[in-house]
Figure: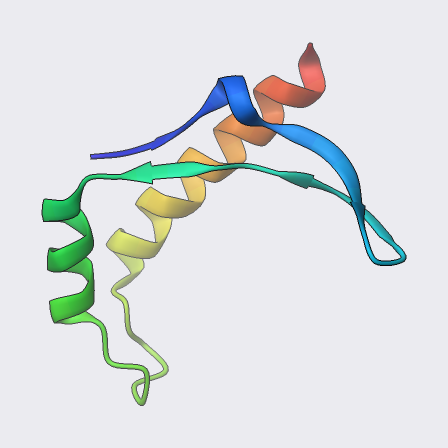
Length: 68
């Protein structure tokens, strides 16, 4: 399970850059599964489906935060 913690999203500065911090919650089981299949030497790893799942959680959280 991968979820964004909407209660902890915040906007701030990191050095001289302004941005948004989005904490993600990833169950330990999911972390282990992601890391088993991840190969940092393979530019196609993780799979498109896994990448899309994580990206959609992040983008949905950013969209909700900015629409508040």
